[in-house]
Amino acid sequence: MCGIVGAVAKRSVKNFLIEGLKKLEYRGYDSAGVAFISKTAGNSYEILRDRCLGRVSVLESSVAEKSLDGCIGIAHTRWATHGKPSVVNAHPHMSGTIAMVHNGIIENYAELKSMLIKHGYIFTSETDTEVFVHLVNYYRKQSCGLLEALQQAIKQVKGAYGTAIIDSAEPDSMVVARCGSPLVIGLGQN
Image 1 (tube, rainbow, N blue to C red):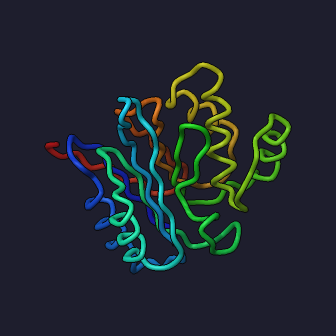
Image 2: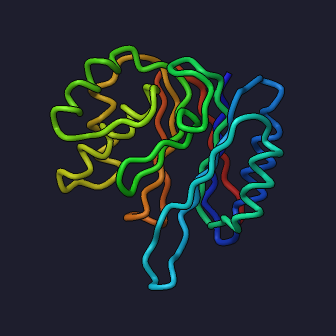
């Protein structure tokens, strides 16, 4: 079963995300990943992502080795439903400046994928999540913000899901949505 953790703070969220994934390990998974919004040397923003097969401890070591970090991030443990266990199929998935983690099944992903291919989107994974993030990006490119793009995308998807999305073009926020899947949001001091 998949697990999602996300955080927005005024300090590093790396340890929070990794510890959150460790608390979800009992649910079973085949891969794990994390994405952070990070400020570049030129004062713009980018998404830094890492994914791996196997245990969260492998991801933790890789993130530390690569010095990945940020004040906004999303993390995921995956139990394969669409596509075999592999690094390419692990979450977060990206499209342009957007990264997404997703739990659930998009029932009409094949139909949506065909539409997106016609609009020039290229797919590297076998997952329905990559379809979902490309769909959000498709609407994002129509001069709307991330929230509106997600609202447009969820009008198109059929299925049950929970998702968390970050966009380096909107580096101070995270957008979440759910349909038939639980989603818990907590608020803290910083």
